[in-house]
Length: 136
Image 1 (cartoon, rainbow, N blue to C red):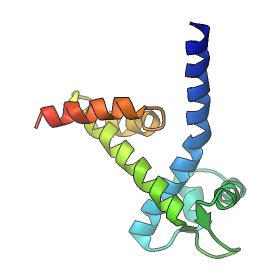
Image 2: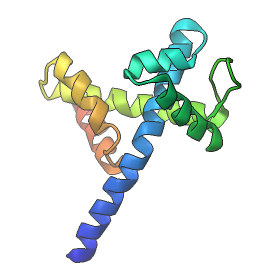
Image 3: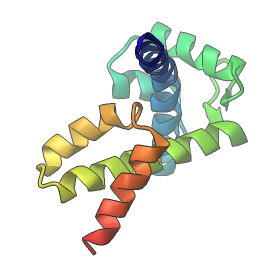
Image 4: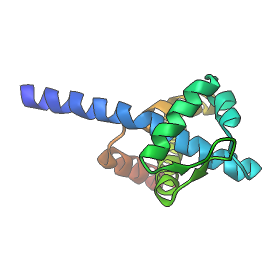
């Protein structure tokens, strides 16, 4: 029993550790798709955080191989960053669709899917997809 509880907490800590990375690469991808370029100021506005916070986070993303950038230059996703952004967007969309299928309002589904997407297991995602498909 204790091992199961420890594994649950370990997974939650791991999910939290990747949540910021996923949010940033997803946002960078969306901003690039919308405007053609992503700058630190765009992320600062999107997340309502300081330029310093964005620069520190982007520095970690660059260190970890998800983005490339230079001072005063746009932020670009690496192939690994693009892969992670796509996976995050797909997970987000699936959770959103599932919540809508349950009868949750769109406004609530948008908000809730933002948090749930980071903590849902592949098994649960498959079950959500199966549920959605069964309703078509």
